[in-house]
Image 1 (cartoon, each protein chain N blue to C red):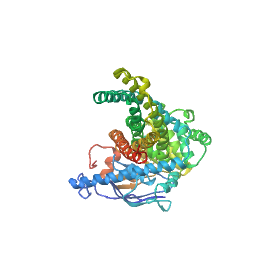
Image 2 (tube, helix red, strand yellow):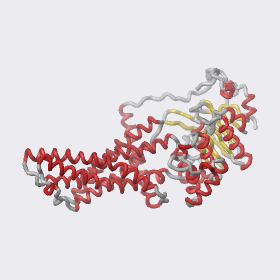
Image 3 (cartoon, each protein chain N blue to C red):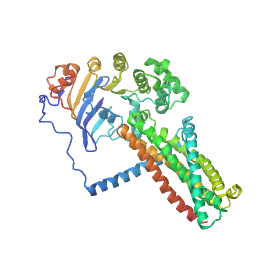
Image 4 (cartoon, rainbow over the protein chains, first blue to last red):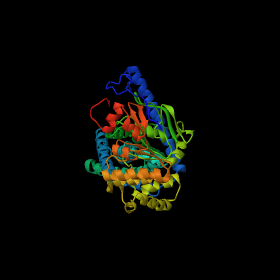
Length: 286
Length: 247
């Protein structure tokens, strides 16, 4: 074979005949930036939906990796237990104390303080606040891990091994998160209630027997709470996994992915909370 | 035979490849050289669907694969393995498990069968003693050899090496060179090597293409590169700091 010279005599330091590769481009104006942000949002939402649908597909049809879900249950559940217990315990104390102060000012009757607090915990606070705490710990961890794998080409290596990153990385986290979010929220909610009861007893002399009252909690509250646990448990790995997979650049990109994961997962939890609560009030109006 | 025809690729407003065309002869050790960031790794990733071109065609064994979607790329990835620049072994898996992964996914072997086969494959790169070690416990050269073993598990016809000797000591680098040469000579595997390593280039390359500012600057044999009067090529292959070469 003979050598092929694209530009045989082009050895001048200035290379006048070479077209510049970096084309100048006009910076976008306000409307253009707004449009670009809108398009990014739509593309992002479409990709997020695609990650969710593909995860469900692999949950139903994918091959089980031995021990993968259990490992993630340990990572997501056991390693978050202490953090979640402490934060929810303190939140329980703060909420009961503040509610007690308000009640003391208006109707100095604490009979329903525990029952109302329990209803609030079961219906909303345990799941929502617990999930927000989980989003910071678990969501950031998932995004950082997957983001690092993207920038070090491990995700490409997975694809070369015919292993879909959604099946291999997101699916086990999705299954583990759904189970462990429920377990953690129930445990952390119980701790929050007990911590609130002790606070009420110490600060307002509410007898424990009076505080630990579940008469206001009905099936509707439990159904809404359970629905929220499942929805948040699904949203955390999907949103943070998507943020990790869409990482670009180097370590700075991983940092951005982690920040985006925490922000977007928290946002997803709050939006889901709004819709599930709305649906809950329609289905279980009591 | 692999053919790149008029490949154009940009990342946002930044053009990287601009009308790149060349052929890779079957069974050869084919080097792609050029400055850092010129698009060498980007180019070979198009071949296995890790990136998609803006325009142009990529032909593999008389089939235009440039429009293949992710599902159709599975067969191409079985045919074309890739060894990445940073080895990309999975830290949570042992070396044997890393090598077993493509056997399980591509060949659908059970875990037990795949691990047994992986241990055999590790013998080829003389890493059988480290089968149960985790990648972080090993050096760069050892990890690179395991990554090569992983790439070869599916008996590919083509292997893409992305800077295989970067960050290796000279002895490990020459062993990797010898392995690439052996793959071509004994098994007839076509190797596409993206590299800056001039020692490797002049030791094992059959054909070379040089990319410069998004275009093919020169393609030919080792002798063609040594004898060219192109100042840019001469400066690059002799590693001179001054000259017409623009970054």
